[in-house]
Image (cartoon, rainbow, N blue to C red; front, side, top):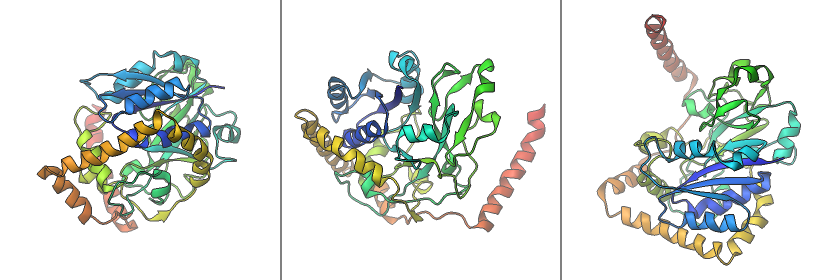
Length: 352
């Protein structure tokens, strides 16, 4: 059974080998990687991974009207790798599929519900943990504190990424879920949440969020390391967003993701399983030097950005900012009350 991960990257060479080793060892049989405008050698690394049979590499050149990720997904829809895949999942370089069933592999996930046609798995937001400097070691080992389950705000705490059966039921790929379902395919869809529960039938057509609940990560979750070290975050901010033409990684992005409320080490056994392949990739005569060059590029890039006041100011704000805290019930109720009033105000106009 072919399982395809679809990845879009720019200047992420320092993190690429960990991500590839982890997801190959989890059971993805193919990785379709799209690179764009790389300065750190990420594209050369994907070329070498393609030579080794561990990835398929497609280069893209900007400008991108809707961002490079949407361009990549549109290209992936026509790619032979997707046509050959039984299951597919667009997943980013800062996202790791963390399966809690069985031995933590895709086989165990599928065995947990053999009738499933899609697994809508929620992000678990992993905070910065106070890490200032970029280090060349696995992010899965560095960042072990995360948001608690059940948060209703920020809304992205319940946002999903979807692993779906690629049987032609959906015409288009999406960043978070497949789109444009065929009407005749809807009756056979069975969408499963990260809790392991079956989602309502409407999820076969639409839905980006699962209900927040204490057990929302019971079956599987997406470890989302959106921030990383403060130095890396500045480099990320200077690069820009992958799925928008112009949108900033700013302090609002940081505050809405920087949760360290609970320790979560659940990914470490899967990371240990991936370690031999990661060591093999780092020892490769081509990938090893490319990885070290990408690490050096990231450090040099941060140093260059510190010569510019706007990026120094962002770094200073990161140093000042404490970790975010989940809203207490009374404040959550206040925010939800405003949301309900706004919905009531909009509803009559929408009906017209």
